[in-house]
Image (cartoon, rainbow, N blue to C red; front, side):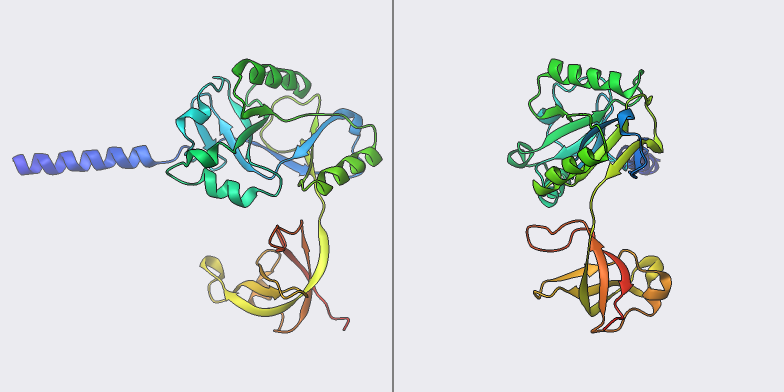
Length: 281
């Protein structure tokens, strides 16, 4: 009987541990549409789009977009307001790789986290329109007095030309793009034109030099193309490939056109996506 009790107790403890390790449901978030030139810019606030890791503070815990808890040091969130916040964990322009390595370590490294900032751009569930929430965010940050807790700067533009000048300045400085948020929008979740993104893509060509096998639903097909740039730099393209292309990929030695956001410090295209086979030569 005593042995049975020990077994039952062990099973109960295991169940409790499994429950404790179960991540919380993914928090509902506002997702951006894409900016087009017909948008009435007088209705929008504009801010820089930061290349960071999306995270929500629920007043007690900082969570990734998928719902898992961010393994930040206790001191990082000490002093954060009890008010829910939405924003990006960010280190620097073109610093995503370093940031990702920092924020996903189960045992946080203080020296690395000292470089991280939490840039907030929304107040989940707050009342009032976005203009009012901007004021609330600035007030909350000021009252908290936490140096790495910052409100994203919001500004206005008069027309498309000014918007593109702003975009050019951000890109030239190594930024990712711009975000546009309707001034009169209540707090929303899901994809909406209340929030728009504007970022550039560039098109160029590279040669197919190999294939990587697919996994999961792409098992038995091509998972990604091994590509070579004119300077000899190699990279992989897995996005933009149809099932037909995965079954019969472009032949070795063929040249394709792909789009990408920008080059990393190592000279590798960031977010490359297959566009078409170059068949003109």
